[in-house]
Length: 305
Image (cartoon, rainbow, N blue to C red; front, side, top):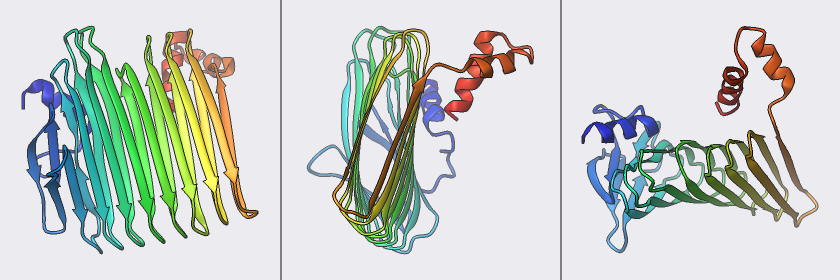
C-alpha cells in the first residue's frame, strides 16, 4: 500500500495495524490483505462480490476489521458482506470506507452489510465514512445495513460520516425478536453542496424488544439532509428515536418521523430538534477569547463527538 492508502485507512480505522488478529482490506473492488484465526473466519463469496464472516458461538472479545478504500476515479464498487454471529458470541466489527478522488469522474462505494445474530449474541459495529481529493469527481457512499436479531441478542451500531462525502443514501433495516436490544448512533457532517439521506426501518416483533436511535447532524454551506424513521411495534416493546441537527449558512435539514403502534403495549417515542447554534453558547465561548468562527467549530466538534 502507498501513502494515500495508509492515510485513508488511518482516517476510517486508526486501530488497524500489523498486530490485528482478524481483518480484510478491500481496495478498488478487490481484497488485497486478509487474516483470520481459529474462531473468526472470512470467506470470499462465490456468487457475488463480497464476504461471509463467521463468528463461532461462545466467542469472547472477538475483533474484526473490514475497511474499504477507493483511489480509482470512475470506479463504482458494490460489495455484499454477511456477518454470521454465533450464539453467545461477543464481537466488535470495525468497518468503513475512505475514497480519494483527484480526477473528474465520480467514485462510488455501495456496501450492503447483513447481520445475523443468533440467540444472546452481542455485536458492537463501528463504521466511518470519509472522502478526500482535489478532483471534480464526486465521492459517493451508499451504505445499506440489514440486521436480524434472535432472542436475547444485542447490537450497538456507531455510524459516522466524517467529512468529504458528496452524496450519500444510508439505509438501515432491522427485525428484532424477543428480549433484544438495538442501539444506533449516527453522526453526519455535510458542507458545500453535499447531500445526505438517512432512513431507519425497524420492526419490533418480539416481546420486550427495544431500539434507541440517535441521529446528530450538521449541515453547512448549501448542503441538504433528510432523516426518515419508520418504527413499527407489533407487540409489547419500546422505541425511542432522536433526531438533532444544526444548520449553518444556507443548510437545510428535513426530519420525517413515522411510528406505528400495532399493540396496546407498544411504547414508541420520536423527538426532533433542528436549528442554529444558540447565541448563548457562542457568547460563552467568545468570552474565553475565541472568535465567532472558532467558537462555532468547538460547538460543532462537541456536538458530533
